[in-house]
Length: 108
Image 1 (cartoon, rainbow, N blue to C red):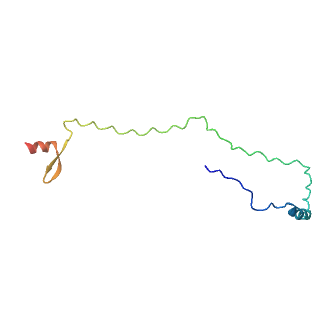
Image 2 (tube, rainbow, N blue to C red; image 1 turned 90 degrees about the vertical axis):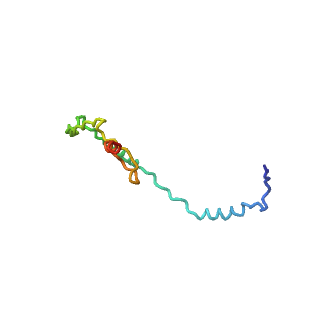
Image 3 (cartoon, one colour; image 1 turned 45 degrees about the vertical axis):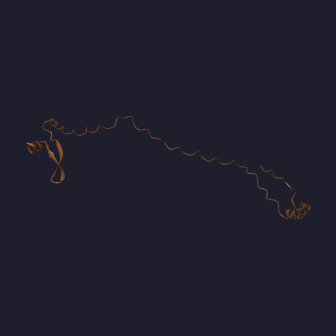
C-alpha cells in the first residue's frame, strides 16, 4: 500500500484582508430586513380531519336463498363384462381399434 504524502500548496496564501474591506462596504449598502409586527391573535387551529364513518353490517342473517337445483341421478355403471374393450390391431396397413366382439369374430 502506498502512502501519500501531503505537500504544501504551490499557490501563495490568499490574504483575507484584501476582500474584507470590499465585503464590509457591500454589507453596509444592504438595508436591514423590515421588522414584522408581533401577531396578537393566536393562530387558528385547523379542525381535525374527519374520520370516515364505518358502517357495521347488520347482525341479521342473510336472506335465505333457493336451494341449488338437484343434479340428475347418475346412471348406473355398466358391468365390466358388457363394457366395450378396445384393442389396437395393425390391419390394412394402419393401426385400427377393434372392439372385443369383433376380435373374437376375427379370430374365430
